[in-house]
Each structure stands twice: as structure tokens, then as C-alpha cells.
Image 1 (tube, helix red, strand yellow):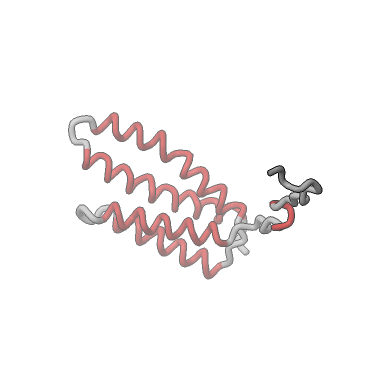
Image 2: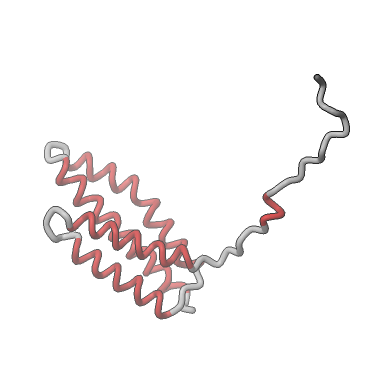
Length: 128
């Protein structure tokens, strides 16, 4: 298990790759109002960056999986700048890195018995 600061930075980097990819996608799609589109994307994606960093901080990710996530982050950052399909591949790398973090989350699974409730059978027969 890694320290908290490198985990947090890894999660923030994964989120930033997603933010950069979304900026590239949206600014290419709206050439007339590029500044407005960029501001909207930053406002919408900033919570995603914070959520990815927080999720990485809480996770129990090991060195091997953190290396895989870091390689996906670097690959996504490089792919974002490659032509038209690059931002989509960068988003895919960011999502794959987040899935790795999400799979190593520390929260224990909920007990099924706590979620389900019991409905007692009625003593009265149904009215006809």
C-alpha cells in the first residue's frame, strides 16, 4: 500500500487526463464559442478531478496496480494530443485508471441482510 500523498496525486492526474481530454473534445466541437465551452467543461470536470483524487486517497491500491494506473495516465496524456480520436482514447485511459482505483476501494461490502427487509405473511386470507 502506498502513502496517501502519491495516491492522491495519482488520482488527481487520472482526473486531469479526463479534464484535458474533455477540453480537447469540446473545444474542437464548438469553434465559435470556445471560451464558453472550456469554462463549462472546467466547471463540470473539476468535481471529477477531486472525486478521483479522493477515491485514490481512500483506496488500498498496491504498487503494481498503481504502476498500471500511472502508465494508463501517461498513455492517456500522450494520446490526448493525437488527432481526432486521441481525446476519446485519453478519456478511455482515464476511465480505466479510475476503474483500477475504484476496484481497490477500502469500503467493506454491505451486508445483504441489512439491505433486505422481511415482509411477514398476513394472517388474514385475501378478501374475495
